[in-house]
Length: 204
Length: 120
Image 1 (cartoon, rainbow over the protein chains, first blue to last red):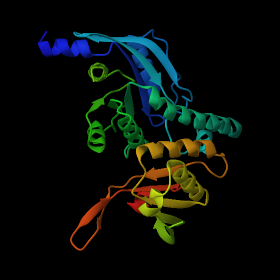
Image 2: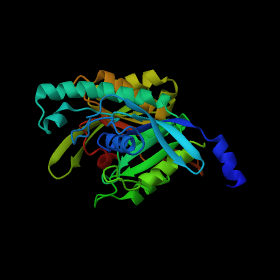
Image 3: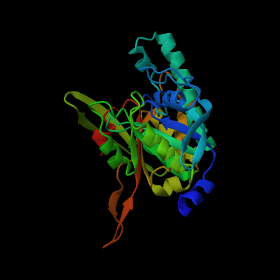
Image 4: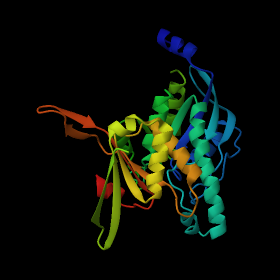
């Protein structure tokens, strides 16, 4: 091990709270569940659904352990509700929900968005999950990234759904002018690179 | 309030015509407002079905505050939130030979489906 590596290993945090943030239906809960399955106790953090705002509460999973040659990192993963600027209950009706259920879901979704915004202050680092198959990318991603930068919270941009034919991770990179990790939370591709990035930010 | 309201009509897509009211808020005006006042002003205009262009733009923290405030005010009938756009800064003439880049934030009612097409 080089001197530099040993210094880096010594300065690296042993515990990290990392938030998973982004727009609705970007694949945040799918990613959280995969991390739990690969590094935690395997318990899913939430239900995955094509209906937007399925996740309406922040949920955390402690003691997900990832490691490299420099040691281990004990992660607390926080899955957050999708952040949006509008909630239209009629969108839920299009997914087959009754009007009453749709309005109830919309009310819970507005509270979920507030909780997601407020969770920004409680994170050591964040994974911003962008749906790489849905360009133009949601403006909310810039709001989230801007707020994380203002709080000096290290960010990893994950270009999710890279397994889809329409996905364009290069466009994500170009758009956000940032290093990105192409992943598929669904099939697991890119996860080792993502864990490598998490280990890197823990040394910041 | 030092803001200018303009109304115009534009052809949207092929057949649908939409009235779009825009409030242009100068940097001089927003400089005198704190974050809460900006959010209240923007949401009051959104509830009047008008878009707001803010010279100087909103900071990321103000954008987050606007989201939080809007979420508390969504009534699931009339007000359902908004759309936001931060176009590339505009290069504006400052003096005879000088220019400056001015950031703008555009906030519009949530049902302005073609905001980016209309304003960028």
